Length: 358
Ligand code: BGC
Image 1 (cartoon, rainbow, N blue to C red):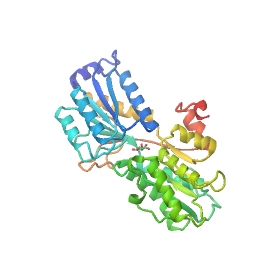
Image 2: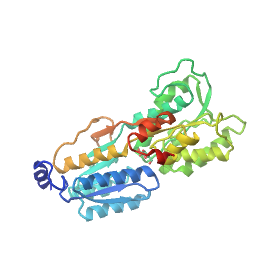
Image 3: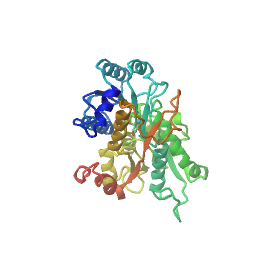
Image 4: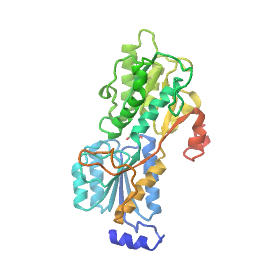
């Protein structure tokens, strides 16, 4: 396989691209979140443009479904796999089957853990994403600018904040959390920020499967247990737009009203409903834009390279230890989006149109 692809690519931009009709299996976690639909579409299109055939599957966040989808891809003769895992620790056996069939595996956005059978990892700088999420909360509270620099004459606080984390089985969730804590810590230590619920550990803050309803319930419980005395929560660290929307529902149900008393809420993924909430209602303050088109390009380039027995470009060989080895990674940059730069970051890049954002 490697030989035929190499032969194909050595002829320059050969007809049909580098793929030569080879099948690539693409396993995505769920369609319930817009970003993964965009990821799947972008990876499929870019692979097809390279001349590959594509088997794109979504597992609706069900682990056995994802495992059997990957098994099917192997049976169908996939020559490479691109996988965004649901639980990064559950693919060890199926990836052994892939390795036995000499099928290279690219971990897509989420690190696949506990296996030697992953070739490369394409993602974003996830620690930095967490720092950006925290910076966006601090920015909304008037404490720092969007680069994280202190603002002269910033309010002294104290501000009440609450913190949410992502799914504990997703390697990214701890990176986001650690990055965010790194940025928030000096403000918590100085007493500028107070976590009124006292729920400051990752375990307390985690949200299984990144589920918005789970987050909504936790927010409701926190409002009941820690804010019934009439004090208000001023800022909420949220690691994902779907979690932010759950939090917003809890606040609305608890009688928070738009304007002065509405808290600053972060997010991630620039999902359309959340971008609208940033741009129009103001219920969400910020999100983090991760350009899924660029991530798709990185994963497709890795796939082409490994199938040609070439080394793809990587820019991190230190941070992503999957429990067996440090997986060579290519990490992309992310951007904070607030109302002021929605147009510049999301519309001018063609990610959303002005009409879609409304
Ligand atoms: C991704 C985030 C996403 C989250 C929930 C993470 O692995 O990196 O972009 O918000 O999963 O889907």
